Amino acid sequence: MNRLTLLVLLATLAPGCHNARDTDPDGGGPTETGTNDPAPAPRIALDYDYRGLRLGQALELRGEASCAGSWAPCSYEWALGNGQTATGLTPGKVSFTKVGFYLPTLTAVSARGTRHSAQAHLAAWDGTFRDDFNRPALDLDQRGWRKPDEETKWTLEQDRLTCETALHRPGSSSLTAWPEARDVRVEVTVRRNPDPTFDRWTDVILRLHPTKRSRSFYRVRLWEETAPNNGIELAVFKIEETSETQHGVLISDPTQAWSTKAERCKSCAYREGYPRGEDIRVVVSLVGSEFELSASSPTQPSTPGLTQKFKDPSPAPHLYAGHVGLALFEGKAQFDDFSYRSLDP
Image 1 (cartoon, rainbow, N blue to C red):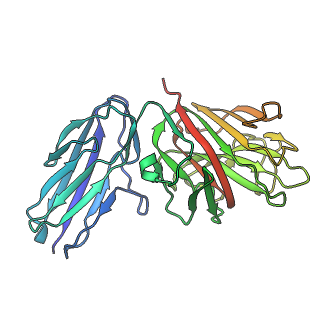
Image 2 (cartoon, rainbow, N blue to C red):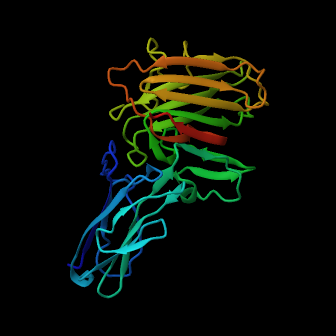
Image 3 (cartoon, rainbow, N blue to C red):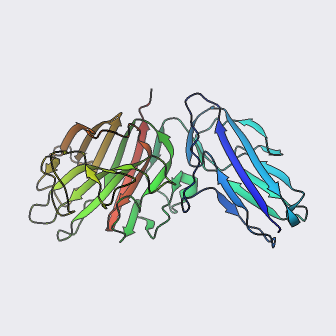
């Protein structure tokens, strides 16, 4: 049987980094580009996909591949993402000196000239990720975002990021940034829900890895209440890998058995009568297992907001923010001026 198996491994050499191969049956992996060979399409696995590297951090690129049938013998070409190229399976160490998003690509070339490629998504960053969405095209890859696999529509409208979904599954609609961090401070502006008859839930997602969407994560939920109360609330839920509920465990008020999306958290940060005409600036800090939350008007400092501090009381807190994203439970929402900063020492 004519067959090519191509394995791409990206392993950092810097202390403290770890390998996390994506083995989810439907969870991401590298981007594969086309082939016109009659042999079956190669299976490609990839370490260090959707990862953040500090500027100047050494990275060793290593590929493993075997060619058979019409693919043999193969040659291998690298485009390292920083303008350099190489041949063979082990092109050596590479680093990135400019902040940006890079797509190192390994291409297997068959004896007949057929080409097949695997691509990694790496962010070289200085500890801060920002996006103000003030541009004509979304350009997710160029801006360091991973789009969810599910049926969620992400667009740009009036220099704001717009999300529309009807999934009713927290986190499954999340748009996730590439870099990762252990401790973070996240800020995002949410356009106030203009419909006083429709409750809305938007989320800041703290996910261990963006391609492992069934794994545990935190969702920081902003609830915008309907009239007449017109309140806003911040609550944090922990979604466990084995959870059988859509919403997870409410950890910002462990004394309450929260069961339905329409039930308000009794001890969470809440403000009644938040003006419909004012946007909401949400700030989330996670250091270890300690959360600090706030929501306020980005343009009217005198408008009372809300704050809350607490620690994840569960026996096994995550202790790791991982990858940061944005999500919407249902309906339509707009985000603006998103940023997060690593607080890692």
